[in-house]
Image 1 (cartoon, rainbow, N blue to C red):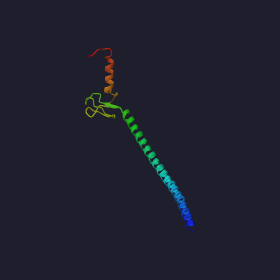
Image 2: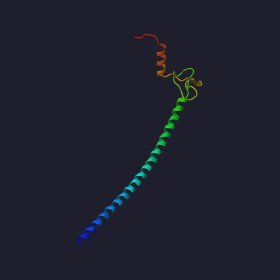
Image 3: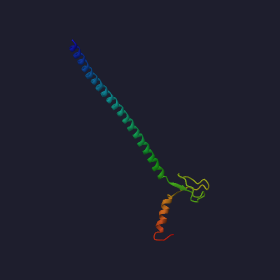
Image 4: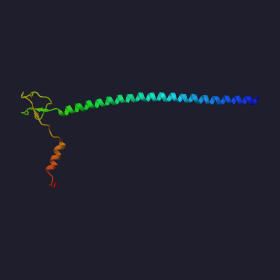
Length: 124
């Protein structure tokens, strides 16, 4: 009788081990599916955010292009010195039509042209 009891307990223990392993495996599969779903959801949010950033960059680029394309206008009599306006109109002092002026050179370009003019000269 002791042998039968030992065999039954052993059989029951082995059965429990296999059953618990299957449950663990099913639980792990469920966890993997949940994590996979979360990753897909996060990826969609990242894509949406990237699209929004791309649109914002595009809008900023358009605004920059527009700003660079703006013409400057100045009074031909230079009543206000070198003051320029970004829109056509009339001078607030003498009421003459503002005239379009050429784009001014920046300091880097002026410096480069100075250096070019002094090539071959020896300066201390």
